Image (cartoon, rainbow, N blue to C red):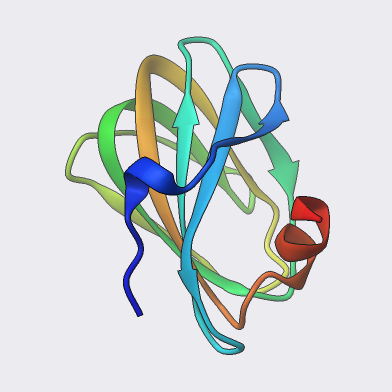
Length: 110
């Protein structure tokens, strides 16, 4: 029921990118993702709905071929199966929320 960030370990995903799975059940998952300047969340797609909030930094976000520069306080929505990704222009963090749960993230953790 409670997720204390200080005791949840970071998981390295891609060069300069790491994540913490904060809380989840079978229908919903919240993840914090940290990026160093210049790192990339490569274009990908998945069957989950995703909404992301930019906690800090500046990112070029691409969704379905459209690009936009977003900063702290902005957010975006990626519908199921749309290609999306980010390039980090200023070191920062995102909060990603998925529905349903990202089973692939849980398997990668084991």
